[in-house]
Image 1 (cartoon, rainbow, N blue to C red):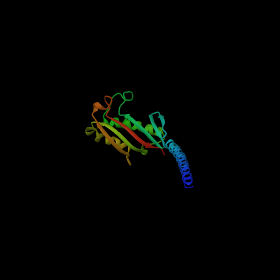
Image 2: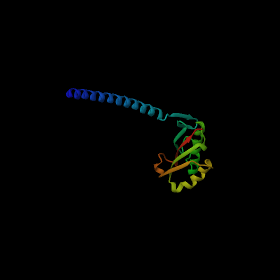
Image 3: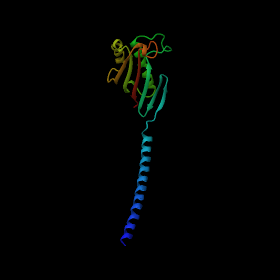
Image 4: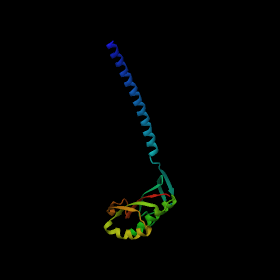
Length: 165
């Protein structure tokens, strides 16, 4: 009799284990599906916005503009100094932003690469302030030698992040 009770007890334990494993597997599958669905919803959607001034990427309420150079030979015969170039960059940026439904007042961050910053930053800042008279965006820059700017004559390159109301 005792042996029979022990055997009955043993047969229930594996069945309980199988049921527990099946339930755990079901929960793991549901959890994996939920994680996959959440990841799919979370991934930022991006859209290329083309404007007469250039293009940018929109993701949600954010616009990303990258790599506007200070001089393009098809726009101006001579490269000009740093003030000419930063005004050109920021005018182009303004056109892209407005074409995408934003404005210069909605710029959150600017990243610049500046050729010979020890020589050019003071004059660049004078012209830059014309475009951001109050509440300027955060800004960071990296310096470079003129020969490392990618093309002869370029003194600055700018990227920005802005929002759309």
